[in-house]
Length: 301
Image 1 (tube, rainbow, N blue to C red):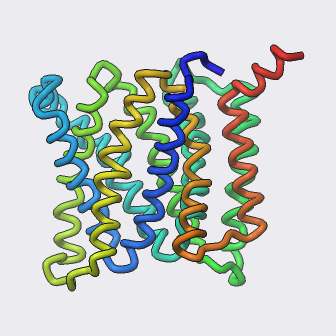
Image 2 (spheres, one colour; image 1 turned 45 degrees about the vertical axis):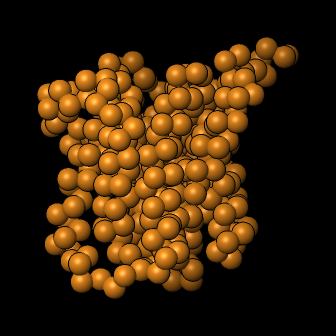
């Protein structure tokens, strides 16, 4: 393993996995009382405001936002507004753990999309194997939804997968921001996606007519925005600076277990045997895609 992954960095990575797993947990609580589009808008708007306060005008943020606002709108759409809406609509019918597992296919779609749209990230035999294993896990998870006997409707199972595809496009598109300071990219996409979702929420949900949610729902919304979005981005970029993007991507393996644990402890959720099998296949596929376990095995033989 990379020597830069010291105990402190591992601790931050585990914390980030718990926080991003918590996003599915908080969303599952809040979406029972707040319409999905309004919940997306609140999450993005509060997180954007928090990041602007954190940045406090540093990094020449406002000139960058003015110069690249069209690109931030596209990134905000495919990396925030669209995938969050898909996940939240799906979570009206499926639990936090299952939604997190399905969304964990993001690196698989990223590899497939990057192979098609870039010249420097082509498929290798290991990547193909990882994608096939991971996609087989996805099929195991959504298979019951193809029959009337499935507990969750097929559309609810497919929405987190479509969100993962959107994240895959965003990861490829986001390469054009590599020269932009990471906090500015985060604040820019959240600002843009807030501007996208605000009118949609107003038109679709008329939030001013909704009853005031209970205190626990309000706290879940605030935690979703400030902890699982704004603070999570700051933490993620700190890990990237200390240990690199590849090591930071290991958080993908930590999010589903934390979401499952929170769902079991606080929401009474349970995963069926087939869902555990699907999670195992997706996790194994991600390990193959990462490649470091295989290289470590070669060095020890």
